[in-house]
Length: 302
Image (cartoon, rainbow, N blue to C red; front, top):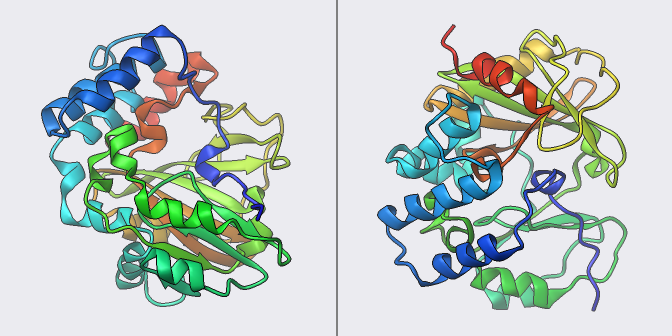
């Protein structure tokens, strides 16, 4: 069988190179060091150094704040861990915003046997609930790679990137409808700090040539972005922007720093998930000279 696999939104980005002798040392250390919080911090700081060319803590940037969250105690709070699980997050979303906003669930597969026996709909999204960056989008009955799906049950995302909120998640596979034709231009990534919306990332472009722009909560373009090239065009303000901001702030209230992910088209809206460590704290702000400006906007108290 072959798979019609498309990267999740989190993978439409400019990633740091993870090859070369220094990254080889990282991969070796990651494999042999104990899976404890002390070594999580060591490995995560090394990832940061290799990605940003400096050690963390020497600047007050968004990436430094994300790393501090990743290696601190807060990342293991019950709400952080619960909302990392793509199935359990839906209950959290409905508890805080009411029914109908979470992306609907077609099925949750809890074993390799259930996955192997599943009659997947001709049109659906298939992804592990306990990982990030893996997804199959089935648009019209394309063959599904069952080996790929059952392989997800053996994967522990924490062991790859040391994001401890993933460490103890039960392996499951969730099946969902294709929302808004899985168009990246319907995605909004809403960065919240201390319960307030600070910046909104909006995509623009084809899936294989995606750009994005960060906007303020009032939809003023920042001419900067995270993880992709900066869009040369300005997107029109969503007509339901105030509703988006209100929902995001309800979901962000229990957390210090969090990203709330939406799918939006016209007046239609779904909450996709909550992301706790954007780009694993390795993502770049573009252009680089906007790093301090964007970081102040997101992190400074209002």
